[in-house]
Amino acid sequence: MRQVDVMWSWVDRWRWYRFEEEWVVDAPVETVWDGMVHVEEWPRWWEGLEFTDSPDQLPVGMEGKHYTTRWKGPLPYGLDIHAVIREASTHDSISADIHGDIEGRCTCRIEESQLGTRGVFSLDVRTTKPWMSLLSPFLKGYFSENHNRLMAKGMRGFTRHLSKGAVA
Image 1 (tube, rainbow, N blue to C red):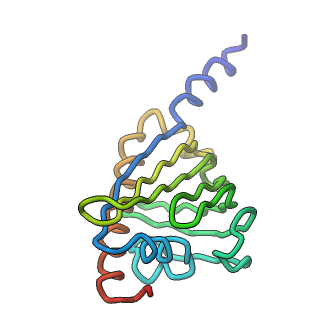
Image 2: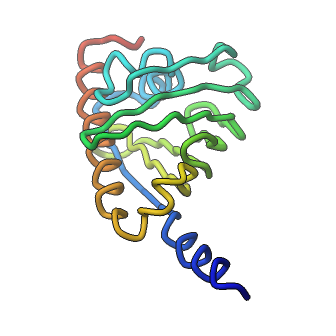
């Protein structure tokens, strides 16, 4: 095995990220679902999400449909992400294959709980931007914190959005 291969193998281990977040929203499952699948509305309430586009008009018959997002967190870099819906079970779960500046899979499950509607988001991805991949062994904590801050802003924005009755 060449030294380059050994080094790339070492870097490759650091490029993988697993995130899991849980949101609890005081709203019915149907309302939360509608807010989650209407990606064109996300920039209105999700600070750090600069842009969304869905030429496929989600949500009816979502499997196979595409959407694109551009994210910019507190750190000085952005991510362009393209998603293709892999599976969707209305008012229950949705999963998508992720491509672009990161690649992998995103899954969201929602369910009723005693505190409201509970959403669990799982993201298993790896970096594809060369500079991020090369710096992941050193900056993984910063990249993870940037993700966590964006998700926290999303939760706060989504809660405010629903409390204003923006989603029927």
